Length: 245
Image (tube, rainbow, N blue to C red):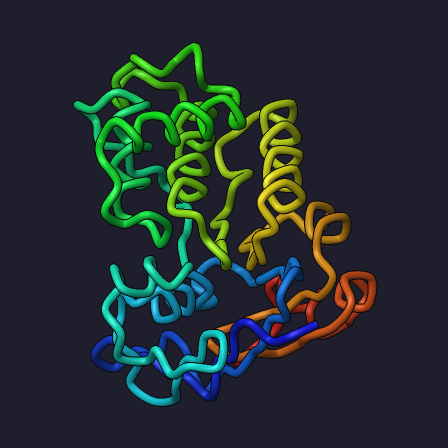
């Protein structure tokens, strides 16, 4: 498998707080890699640096062999990097189909397409995510599960190569959570995306991920097969709260 992402020794601080410290990781094309860690471990900050929301204070980010460390977020989207958010961020006054059409217009494929073409694409992704019947519902009127599905539809509409999934289970009941997991697994199979999956629930990553990376207090403390990470005493200590930086 060819390498799609390489993160080299990246760090980020906010004032006196070191949120991410000297973290490196790589992802091969077609993989699902899990990113774990307790609250405040630096998971979302790391993703924000890779996707371009935050500048890195040290280190670099390589995507498909090219240095994108200083590339703006919208250009990273055009290259094929996209994400969902732990807290859904809909356009509250746009319909579901309108929201997905906006993503289709700003993705990497057919960047100069018409809005009518974007609506056609949006219909396809809404159908895939089970939201076609909600296509004319405003973002502010969707349920949490529907909003999470909309996040995925919007991300897929940008035609990504690399998809970051951030805490898809949060706030969902067990039935909804399993539906969300199956939807992401189907998206990988149908659209051929590579996935970095931020998740607290080890059982999900045990099933979905080929490798797991663990952060704690902004540092990478473990990386390996899901079953090895699940049985790592140091990782277990950190999750139980007795691990110190």
